[in-house]
Image (cartoon, rainbow, N blue to C red):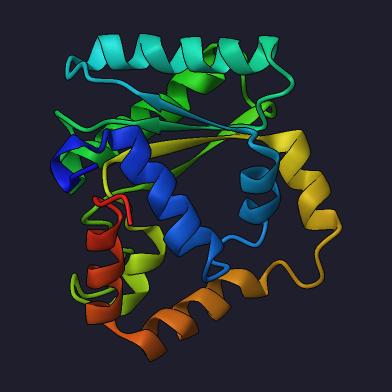
Length: 184
């Protein structure tokens, strides 16, 4: 399979396995990968209202499907600009509250141009939240609370990731992300 034929979902799955899981960016990802409980949903629409309706449908799917632990809601088109993506994240969070999902689901955000507030764009630390495509990670809050309760010192995860990213450098992560677009 050539790089051109990999779907956004396949590239995102590669990212989860080759970056997030392999380098323990999220210590909770391994179990979900091994249990095959991550749902990869690609939304090709670019219209904000349609994307938001699809997001609520993804939450409804999680409501009805306890065998799915988490959903990666992938947006390959329409939200390439980081600031327009951040606007979407804000609106999506408000929508979850409006739809009664506060305390049930939370969103984590990933983007190819992710940049933490106060960090330079080229800081390696940004790569801890950079993904092949703009992606909203829909997380079950009850599962996250349980995972955090069973994990020693969860507050250290971001600092550990930033230290790792700074040690490896941006070029390392650029190559890693690039490798997600191929099947090998």
